[in-house]
Image (tube, rainbow, N blue to C red):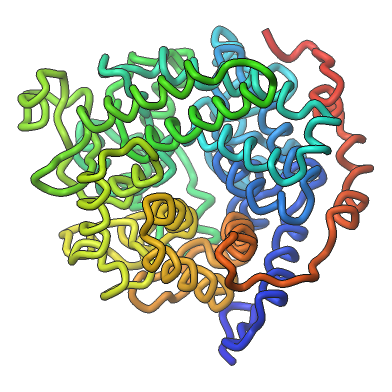
Length: 499
């Protein structure tokens, strides 16, 4: 038996006990209407975290999983964007930076339709939400239909996708661009080094990094990078959160692959609601073709980011005649398109070879896919998104491998994820070689995706008894419906916070 932080892992632990430990993490991080990623480092609600969390919560309580998404969508802006943070007003301002007084969403974002009764950030995160909503519905279709869950979230999710496909097509090739590294979710990836090098950093004295109160400096972004993040966010805010006017715009393969996967999910939701889903299905296939056209590099065997505002024309730009150039950094983001059912077979086979080769080492040098090229000059096994293995990206790859018939590899990845989750104390991320815990322990999406893997229909690690839906639903229903914002969403009340 080994000890990691304050949690103890028994290598012989059963699936049932792992399930209960994961459930305890989610219960401990539940606020009554949503789930914080971790109590110390991340004390608010994060967008793509809540999507992944709801996917795991559906196995404990479909009602709570629906509430998780409803709370997030209740903070949606009038232009359709879903903000990457929804702030809890009871948390002190100095507990997290950038805090609500930095983003000034209700004033700086007024022209974009920011809500007036809740404070949010002004940037976004990857669009996993429609996929999450569909999976949550499938966990208990009767409850979902009785509550009108899909009929209420569908218009909001459709508006979210419209925002990304129209306001964020900054490269003109049909794909969505991110305008800040935090939007892509892999905040400190070496993929951002080249486009960030054009940004003048904010002075170090102009902000205080709260993240270093909870994490080791050697595991976190550098002060120089953080200064550039702050400068980009400041300029975006001061421009009224208007898209297209900044100095940073990148088409990212993972962000767009998740948008495509969620387009397929929206097609399923439309069909469930009695509408035709064929248009959305066709759009997902067109977006897949655009992803291949703009971001696939056959010589390197993976997808790369495109720096839309790069000066000059690189090889990628010369190939398709579009502005910008590919960023030749191998990130796990370039493997995530394995999620897509319409991906050409030759590209699928090449991506599997790349994941298993020297750059990522899956099944050989590593049991979990690292966030960055093992052979890259910028690789660091502990520094945030510059090498460590993350549970959400590996969960996505497990789904992609299984989708394309790579059952043996998918089974191996699934087993490694479950072993590592328990052994690490549900860590935020781990060293890809040693699987040593890094970042926060008791991390919500790690616990949630562990639950989802335990319930996956592979025949392994299945168990008969676990806490039933009713137990969890009763435990939180009173606090959920006592919350004004959740109540407004539930009843359709306007509350004056949306345009």
